[in-house]
Length: 149
Image (cartoon, rainbow, N blue to C red; front, side):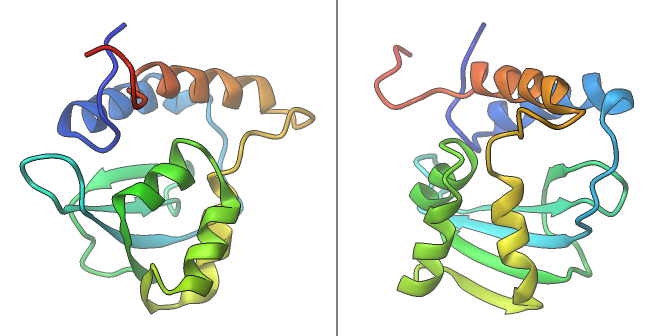
């Protein structure tokens, strides 16, 4: 299986295909947000990645481009986004907020809930097996530093 750098156009397309494949099996999330996300310092030709996260349609959805209306906007550096969403380190978000690495506008109270969504799936939950399967598929298409190209 081919792996792509996190947030590259190929990675975004691969993750969208996985999401579409599992769409009918994924239950709704209780945490409803619409957040614009800007990631700076990406290691690509276009160093800024603009996208959004939307859970109001049921499941977690990560898409390119900003929404016209969102609950909040967050701007963070690429290495922090990687720690939060690839390494699934919710503590990274808290440290970054305290350390001023993150710029927030809007309803920032929902940011900690977003960090919690990036945490590893709960092995005791009803949807735990499905969530672990989806996460494993996303991990398989995500290149890690030091992986052969």
